[in-house]
Length: 174
Ligand code: NI
Image 1 (tube, rainbow, N blue to C red):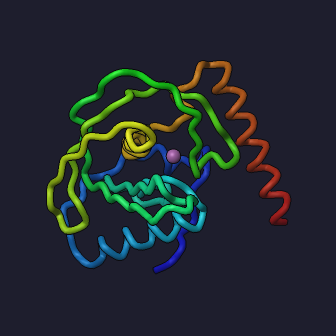
Image 2: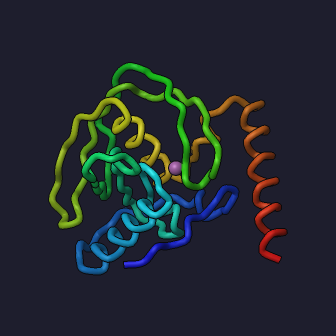
Image 3: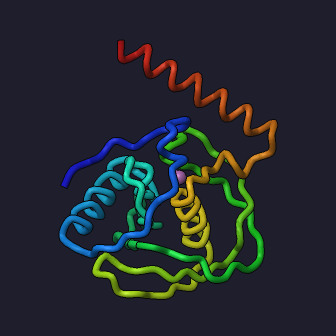
């Protein structure tokens, strides 16, 4: 297992839509293990494969990540959100937007159908933080980012903040 580099906005690879997974083999399991190690090291509640430069329809979520609770790792491969109900606003973060928090409106409850790492189909009804995380991570698979949900003004402010941050990191590395 290894910790992969998490791509940060505005890296163009984050905009590339993921392709469906067709082979459920040991290489896929190793990729998911790397994703989990990368997410826990960050730490974060969710991570999508495009965030580590892998354009595939895979994301993982652990809503207990960083808490004192036992881990609750969930793996979603080729997911499809089949039902969305209600609306809710949550202060979201994203490992590709380090330091940013933005209020984003999402469905309050969702049903998702996906495959696990062995290729078995499962269906899950989710609410609360899990429902938010499923919608956020599923967006990554279509190259959609949290900045796309903001008003034009907030989008400009966040874009500028991320550009400034990227510039500071480049300067620090020199
Ligand atoms: Ni994200």
